[in-house]
Image (cartoon, rainbow, N blue to C red; front, side, top):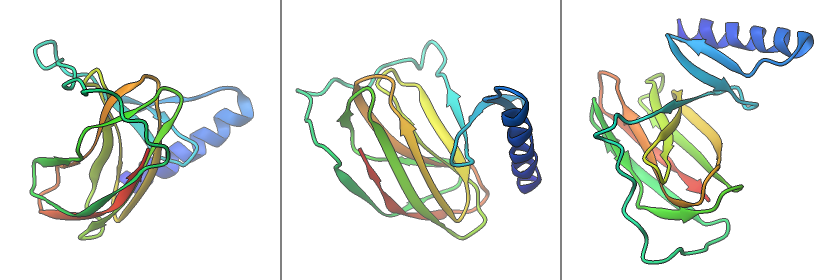
Amino acid sequence: MKKFKKKLLAVLTVVGLLTGSMSVLADSGDDGVLCEDGYIEYTEYPSGDELVPMEPAIGPVYEINTMKGIDGWEIETGHSATSAIFYASNGNSINVSVNIAPADVDVKVGIVQPDGVRRYVEGDTTVGHSFALTQSGNYKVYIQNDSGVTVTVAGSYVY
């Protein structure tokens, strides 16, 4: 069913590009933005009692094109794994590239913004996506496993 939805969204995108502007699409009741790489990027806003910004950094650490490894994160069903907190600037991006095992198991691959808002894409087997940043501050990369099996994720992220 997800593959059908992805194909349908691709067709709708082409039609939208030919007939006018179309960037926001609905999928399972949640709004998402179709990105140039074919992924739909979703946004999760925490409820009022969960909206707590990440702890402040002692001072921003400015690292350009810093690559960090995701070395075999084993994530049980219903759980997530997160990177260490790092500083990134507005106007830059965080590029995440991971391989997921077993293959064909959907996971959420995303970032936690400085304000606690989560942005993510869903995928299986291999996911590679660039998250454009709209604010400066402390970020984390996260992978959420809502499938029925434990997954192992390996790859990297660059900011």
